[in-house]
Each structure stands twice: as C-alpha cells, then as structure tokens.
Image (cartoon, rainbow, N blue to C red):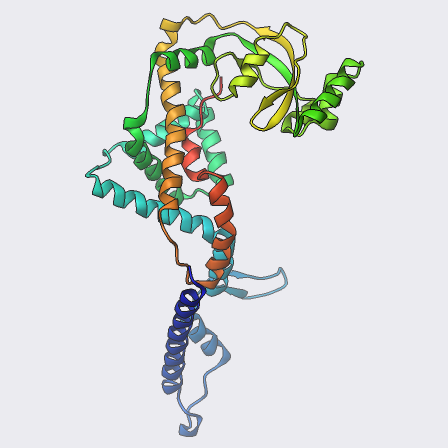
Amino acid sequence: MPETTHTRRLATLCSIAAITLTALLITACSNTPSSTTGQKPPSLEDSIERVHSIDPPVAYWKTDRERGRGTAVDRNTMDSLLMEMAGRLALQEAILDGLLARTLEQRGITLEADAIQREQALLTRILSRDETEAIRLLEEIRRREGLGPVRFSALLRRNASLRRLIEAQVDLREEAVFASWNTLHGPRRSARVLVTPNLAEARDALELIRSGQDFSEVAARFSTDESASTGGLLEPVSRLDPSWPTAFRETLWALEAGAISEPVLVDGDYLVIMFLEELPGDGIDFEQGRAEAQEYLRRAQERILMDTEARKMLDSVEVDVIDSELDRAWDGLLPALKSSGLPSSRMTTESESR
C-alpha cells in the first residue's frame, strides 16, 4: 500500500484517539468537585479507579510480601504486546475466514450441520486410531498451538469450508489408488542418503565412501539434508509413494542391497543413495486395501488442494493495516506467505502414518 495512504489513515486514527481522550479528560475534570467548594479532593484510589474505567485492567500481580490486590496490568498494554506477538497470524486467519464465508455465499454453498463435527472426527482419526491416544494428542497440539475454543472452532470451520470448495477437484484414478495401496501395504526399502548442492561435492563425498569411509560418517559431515544428524538414515520408502521424488524412488529401487548410487539430480540438489534392506509388505492385497487406499489418496489430495486454495485466496486481497503494532507484525509475515502454506489449514489434513 502507498506510504501516504498508510500515514494518512494512521494519522486520522491518532487524531480520533486524541479527541476521544481529550473528551474523556474534559468530562472527568468537569465532574471532579472543585477544591474551592470546600469538598474533599479525590483520593489516589479514586483517581486510579477512574483511569481503570477508561483502560480496565486484565490482571494483577504482586510479590509474596505485598498486601492487597497488587499492580494492575491494563488492557492497552496487553493489546500492544499481543498485537506484535500474534497479530499477524490472527489477521491472516481473520482474512481467510472472511474470504471463505464470502466465497461460500457467492457460490450458494451451505456447510452441512455436522460439517464441524466431521472435521474434528477426521482430525482425531488421523492423529491415532486409538481414541484415547487421539484425544491426548489433540489436547497436546491445542496447547502447543494456542488453539483455545475460539481458534479451534474457527480452524474446524475453515477446513470444512476449504474441503467443500475443492471437493470436485479430487481425482481417484485407479493407478493413483494402486499407488496409495502400495504406499500403505506394499514392500518398502530403507536407505541412507547424502545431499549436496552441486555435483562436484557429491562426487567428492562418493570418493570418500569408496575409499573406505563409512557412509553415515560422510553423510553426517557433508550432507545438507536434515537426515545428516542420523547419518543420512531415512524412513522406509515404498516404490510408488508420491511424497518422495520420482528420481529418488526409481534410483533406490534399481539398486542391489548394499549398493551405492552415482550422484542423482533431485530438485536442484545432488543425492548419493545407499540401499540398506527391503522390508516385505504386510500381506493385505489390493482389493482388501482398496477402500483404505482411496481414503488415503483423497486426504492427500485434499491437503494439497486446500493449501493451494488458501494461498490463492490470500494472494487475491490487498491488506491495509492501520494499526502501528499490527503493521510491524504484518510486514514480517509477508515474505513467509509467499514461500509457505497456511499452517492452520494443514493441521487437520496431515496423512496418517503407517
């Protein structure tokens, strides 16, 4: 937004605040008995109470040695701190919620009465198949993410709205369902990987390994992947799992046990892959696992489509922040919005672990 617009709106807001404060002070002075009338002037407690009526406290604090209620923490102080600390996320969520409500109305879509309950049931099912464990994990997530009653309810409605908007785009083709079944029930391979930003470094690392140095030690020293902390060890990978890059899967599944690949270009980096062992499938054939595979595929596609829809909506609006604390917080958020999704829309659509 142009700096002139922002400054003008902020100045207007400050002017209104000053006028309001002046009016309050004038009223307070006009209602204060004059000392010349012989009446007793207001006490300190009366003055504090009058200030608190303008800016009411939200909490009090005191040490063990103090008596009385203690020192007040006023709402104005808290508002400023909270605005800078969490205002950008709150504004982002409020904007997306507003956009979703408007879009649903424009398209004539009404959420079913049980849509929110179904979202919560889906979340608990994704977290764990054991109901008690799912409830425990959900409570832990809510505490960690600050999801109280208001934000959690909004989160469920947000996800239900996004899910309705993208439902027609979900594509359950047979080959994709088969790939999901393979991911859930087929054989998997464990591996170590070493990631470098260029081919020369990958070749140098490979030479160290071929000269006798342990793969895990070389990976821990030179790999740029987060798996370096475990010597490049990865979770077992199925042959058709689309969450792993195709070039990586094809290379891994072409290796013999114990073999090490040549450097492979994957998403701009060069990988050296070591095939450790193959783990057999769990014995559930395709027809037995079809329904589960379809559900798995649906949730995986919904997650991607919902994130894409949320980013598209946020990219379509221009935000004019006129509060100074919130403006500082929002400016810090803009680069992140361009490079990442919406965490709050992702939480309830993460795929189940095996």
